[in-house]
Image (cartoon, protein in one colour):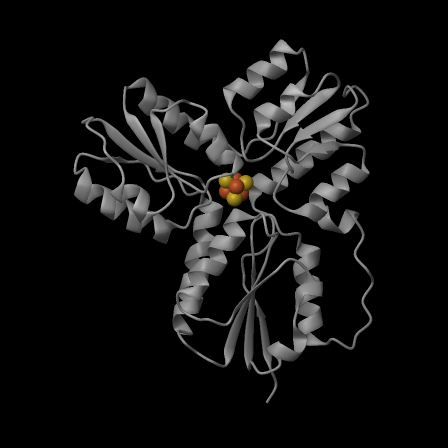
Length: 306
Ligand code: SF4
């Protein structure tokens, strides 16, 4: 029987990622941009996209928090990544007279505004997110009235007396995890104001993945591959959703991670990807699964940003 390899309909860069990559290209190609160009973190969570920019002269800072990164920069200009940045970091760039460019995704900007609005109205803001993610770093920079919730255990450990409590979230969280946490919060704090802020791009992929995977619940003949960087939060969430329905889930960064002999036993393989996964990497995985004997041209750094 011929094996079916199916590329899911929504793949590769979302609008926020596309925008951040294109904007960064414009910045580095503008002769008026002051050099050296620093980037606080990877522009989007994909090491190959980041490598393209490093190869084009951008200094990508990868260690520590954004505020620590900007503190060590003495000259040149600075690019803030799609994941957003705190006002503390922006103010530090201004104080150090470093010209800066902000490629924050509009969905992230919007979620930051929600935090600011509710803090201004004297609410305690419960923020559902994953520690160490740059979006969380920005959210927590607003002070101790923002409380990070990563799990149901964190909900159980909460002790808040205020009658003004709002819950919001990192834009790339799983809507299903959020629903579970919000339900638990509502029992504890019935007056909770819910401001769910999963971005449209993450949401539509999660729904697509859930719809397809639920049709293959415990189906031993079907496997799912998610292509994404190990630092890509939204990619990992897609794999998490699949694992609730089917154990045959393989998270890979590139074609080199494919275990072809292991995949041989499946009749059907679905391929999905996160919002920061280059299309060229996904296509390479797809073509290899279709026909591994074909000679493929190695990908270039330019391929990763198309
Ligand atoms: S995943 Fe969502 S929040 Fe992140 S860049 Fe894409 S659209 Fe923006």
